[in-house]
Length: 362
Ligand code: PMV
Image (cartoon, rainbow, N blue to C red; front, side, top):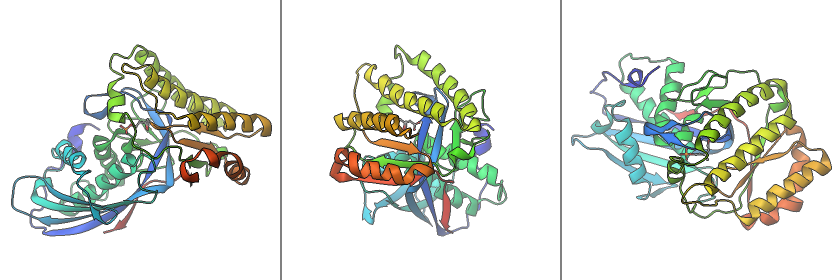
């Protein structure tokens, strides 16, 4: 599919308004996306676990209007929010060509997260995918016939739109594993996320992700800036080809159920992501001392208990602990006894691999 396939060609202008509601989860990358080209096209492929409980719930109410500009209000957790407006304005500008009805309506966007406000958990993936899904459901109400009821088209366009809001958001529409970015190992596209088409061994069923909240403050360097610093980065070329290799390795690992090999790829990806940050110009560090304390504790615990727990990081200081379901009890005990002291206000969130977004209001 190409961009042109996602342009809505004609729509019913008689519809006065209505509302739709979606919940959409966050996701955690195993092979990381870091570096992009024009129009949110990734420099390298990535693959992620979709989460279950860390999600954004968004309701969009639309009503017909006259003026020829974008008009919307955003309410975050019940309160009108001005801070999110520029991001949504940019999003509307980017997607207008695919959704020509956007200037015909006023949109009231009401959104909330299931995870605590400013927990340092990136809400852009869940937030942008939820709003993209709402707008696409509105498009379905307005469109006469075009691709109505075609689930595969719906998911692709939702992911395509979400990508234009925030790259990693395109991996939140489906589950349990989603690939984004052209590569030779899996079915894939640069334009949208695709459900991983390979075999997944039962060792990875109900895989757990406990997120240790090390630092809930605002990040010193946003991912938008971080991605840009990959232009002219001395190790960029090697990094992008490493991501291709790691995806290929992971495909084999997911099929065979080799968790020891999984741990190596996932941890190496997390550290490489942060190594790219530390070696860009200007350089920066998003990990905190407690991030490293936790990583060392996880390594100690794994060696002493023959455990398969591993860590990954996104663009921040929080640590995602990934582990098989059969270790749940022991790992939660380990967290309570030894890791909670490194978490800000003792906070951590238990989540697990999930199936993707759900429509909850029509
Ligand atoms: O979607 P963005 O632009 O916020 O970038 C997110 C990048 C990482 O979370 C660091 C990695 C990834 O693949 O999700």
